[in-house]
Amino acid sequence: MKQIKWIFLAFAILSAACMMGIGISIAESSATGVFLCIVGLIAIMGYGFKTKKKMRENGEL
Image 1: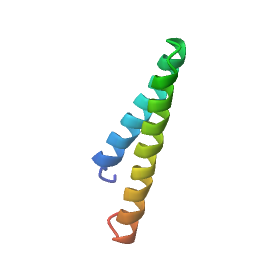
Image 2: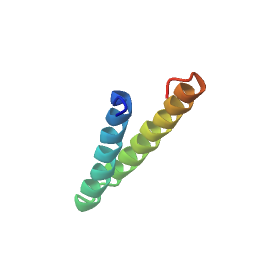
Image 3: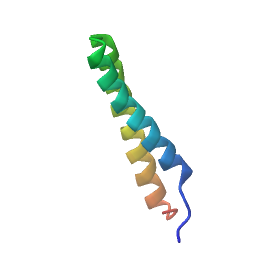
């Protein structure tokens, strides 16, 4: 069994929280909230993919 990569678990939880935030913001009719959650989601997922690429290049994955 492989070791858990805690950083990727954190990225997944934060991304899911942003997705939930989008839904909550839509329900609250908050355009600002939707915008901020989308920006946060893109930033978190982008940083996660960047981190994964760097770890793969260094042979850590």
